[in-house]
Amino acid sequence: MKQNNELINRRSFLNLTGTGGIAAVTAVMGSALWSMQPKQAIAAPLAETLNPDAALKRLMDGNQRFMLQLGEHPDQSRARVKEVAQAQHPFATLLSCADSRVPPEILFDEGIGDLFDIRVAGNIVTPEVLGSLEYAVELLGTPLVMVLGHERCGAVTAAVQGQSLPGYIGSFVKAIKPAISKIEGELDDRVDQAVVANVQYQIQKLKQDSTILSQRLLDGKLKIVGGRYDLDTGEITLI
Ligand SMILES: [Zn+2]
Image (cartoon, rainbow, N blue to C red; front, side, top):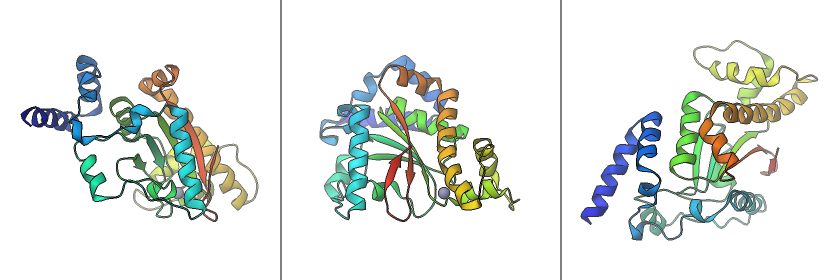
């Protein structure tokens, strides 16, 4: 018990440090610390047992169940809350829009401790988002990252329309603009194209900007994919 408390305290310290601090501490301590978990806390951590392809299959199978109204609603019991109380091992990391119609756990028919969600309007890569992604991949061992855009995204529409927005509302427009410079056609068509182009651009950006993620990709320990959520059907297609 005393050992468990020490582990928890160490983990709490690491959770409170910045990304740079975490990386530095990890470099010194190696991965051993992260594999030391209270025995009763984890049955079979999916992040450790699933390779990137298997993680993607699990994610997409869950979306099929959701779409066909065959949801199993896994990992939402009181027992699951207890199981993951001391440590998390999410098998997939989602960078998705903050849109209220796009909640990852529901769309992928998953539960508590399964997905590491980063949600921001327009699913854009900012330094804080990149730090969160690196945390999930490097320290939690997530084998899969999906950047998920969606149909009729308000943030993407604002970027396509190029309107000026009050306060900080337009901050994400700036981050989407470079993705849509070559988009042409009618507004609806342009928004559809821009949603896909934005996902591709954000993936390119996070690969370019993060040596942690690119190294994991090179080592075959990580897969980064893009997805588009159809608001009408509930289906997610890979981009
Ligand atoms: Zn959106």
